[in-house]
Image 1 (cartoon, rainbow, N blue to C red):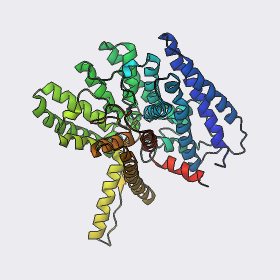
Image 2 (cartoon, rainbow, N blue to C red):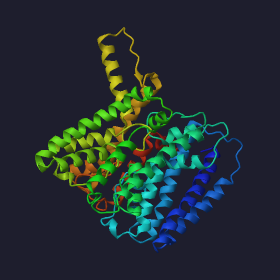
Image 3 (cartoon, rainbow, N blue to C red):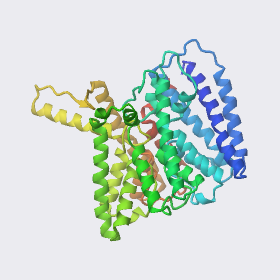
Image 4 (cartoon, rainbow, N blue to C red):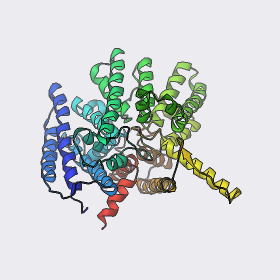
Length: 471
């Protein structure tokens, strides 16, 4: 890491993070909870941030490699410092605290707490607050507040952090693009809070649910997730999970009234089709169990939206679902929703590109002399992106296998290991037979935490960081 701008920008991130800690402090004061667990990380991050930000640089340009390293280090450092509130509150060990924090900031939603209802309201808020920040991205949040490089090279940071094949500008300025994305983000948040409050859920509970919904995080203030909500509230949450799984560029196109571009979106059409068919399949299979249309319909729509968008909320015992539904859910975990959303997983755009690549390669075998151009969203896909997509898929599978092998040392069943690794690596959090992750060893928790970071940052930023550290 020879480029000093990396350290300088890490300083900016830490300063912004220290300011962000003011919000949970205010919540703690309002509910008369302890504030020391938030004061200490605030001071630590502020001091570190000021020191790093004072580093003088000759070149303020940020390049692709720098973007990957800044993003990776920012997420790791924020996770390390962000774990302190859980640790200082003496509710758990530091390894558990780190797991909970990474689960929050990567919007995974897996927890080590067996009784979240016993947590003070300030920590309950903090968990969902971290998910709100992590949903759009730590760096993306910072970019919306402070300027970066004058030549607008900050798009490298946006591409390194936002999920999907690539992220383009909505408008000529990267900073304005980020601001527009956050406007969409907070409009979704505010509107869901409003609808839930109207349905008598209370402002605090509605805020926590909404922060975990639009970020597709899935942390709940109840041990039973969201099973006690009214039927209307369940459908509200399901709707916003679905909306949060859509590429945010689509919302910008709606504002710009470019409806033809929306209709032509291959990813959006695939997302809707997969959601509808999956919900219908689960409804048919679960109706045989419950013999109740409202229970089967609400459960199928809610859980399909929850798993497909990597949110991880639950409104019932999915262990009762037939094996075919569980296998479908595992597939949906890995595929997830659209690029450019707040979701984890492989993304539908990559799935479409992989399928088109397979089709092209098969046609090449049949017709060796023919030329086949791959197009996605009406645009020609160059070979570099196709190769990158294939590499990502290979790494995705290899890392899942490696993590699963290490977690198997704990001696749990194969089903448990598969559920744990799939749900964390795909940032879903919802498991079939795991209510919390406290039963895993410290080694497994650390490895699963690394898996959550790899899944959320989509592998390459972390790989680039470790490759650079070896030099």
